[in-house]
Image (cartoon, rainbow, N blue to C red; front, top):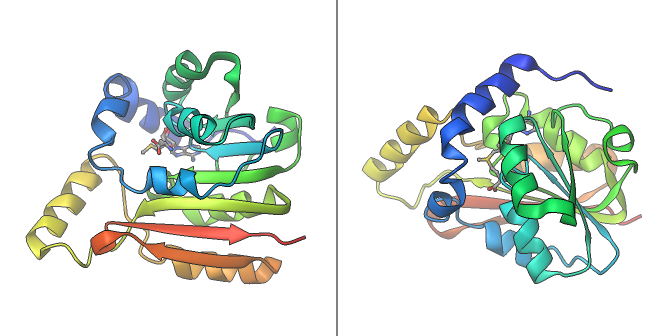
Length: 214
Ligand SMILES: C[S@@+](CC[C@H](N)C(=O)[O-])C[C@H]1O[C@@H](n2cnc3c(N)ncnc32)[C@H](O)[C@@H]1O
């Protein structure tokens, strides 16, 4: 099994040690775009959904409410976040600790690929996020899709609000990935995959969907 980058795992645990208890209640005020992403999953009963960087399991629970009957899987590097996800999802989802940049889906979840993969506000916290994006593509089943939402360029926000937001995000070790769409295009092109992008209001968030046709 791929080994965990212990420093990053410890950093994430330290960021979320206390925050995880108030995470779901507070993040709904600034992690916009997640429900739009989930609405677009098109998950059919019996098919599989993996969330990379699943945090408290909020999105997997919401996906199940929106698209019932899917088989749910969650990966996170933080043991503490996984504790919260386990408490929320119980047996509804199979959860595992691992690094988004290099994990074995077969070893962790007993299957090599997934029909749907989502990555929500995690790439902005992963130093080698391009590798995580590539992993998301690698674990797609034929006909599958990877759905990503994360902070955008915020170019429609007043400059002062944008500056304040970026300062505050940095406090949580979050860096908006301004070249997310370009990088997704490049990674997808190398693998013969299709890409769609959506810019959220004022560029606050961005959604990228990568589709594998066969
Ligand atoms: C801002 S939270 C987002 C949680 C959830 N996806 C959501 O939208 O509410 C980012 C999550 O990514 C996880 N994470 C950060 N780096 C990771 C990595 N290298 N591999 C797996 N998970 C990682 C963190 O532990 C945290 O749970």
